[in-house]
Amino acid sequence: MSTLFKLSALVLFLFASINLPAQSFYKERESRDNILSIGIGPSFAYLDNGGQYRAINFEIKPSISASLTKRLNDRFEVKATGGVQWISSGGDPSKAVTDIWAANNSAFTAVGSAYYFDLMPSFYIVPFGNHMNRSLFNFYAGFGIGVMAVNTKQTKSFSKDEVPQREKITTGYVPLRGGITYSLNAFSDIALEGTLLTTFTDNLDGNVNFNRFGDHLVQGQIVYRRYFFSKFKD
Image 1 (spheres, rainbow, N blue to C red):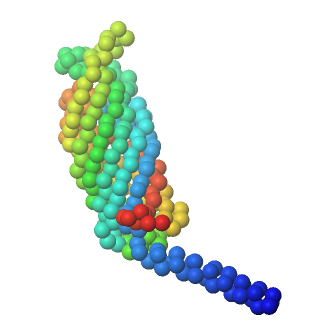
Image 2 (image 1 turned 135 degrees about the vertical axis):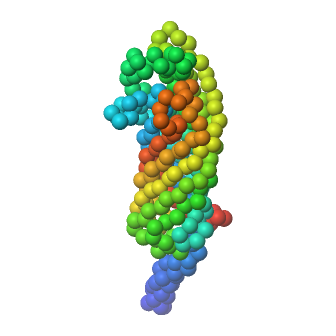
């Protein structure tokens, strides 16, 4: 009787051991086509009073982002991204430059933050139909449309006695975003992502038409990506 009990227990244990992986494999046949992403990294703003960019003399500030992605098929997806980037004027402008700014009543300094939200379709270089069979490395890229609200404190000189004026501006922008992903496990990736937010204005910093281009934001982030079901199944 004891031997029969032991054999029965062994069979049940082996059956459970085989059945659990089988259930897990069967469950993961349904692709997790939603991705939650969190990113953080350095950034800078291309501003008229931002600094000397060719000499790499400008301010580096942090940026944070979060996004929700819906995969449409094995290659294309739609991503909604929101975040904040801190911005600052910088560099060491010459007296000739500051004389031009003073004559145009332009801001010498601008420090603040930019809050943004955008929608963007993107595509993968290596297609995959299910999250379980994606490649170890992949590359994604895309562009879209967004809206940005920028709050800054600006001064019209470098005088320490000047009281900064608060300024607000809202503008549209086109995000250009791409990244390289590395699969950590069945449900998670880590990515190196670069983003250019090309705005529709040259007045984020209170200084207009001094540089050749408008005001734009640039980001480089480390992004954690997590795949999940639309109904939050385990």
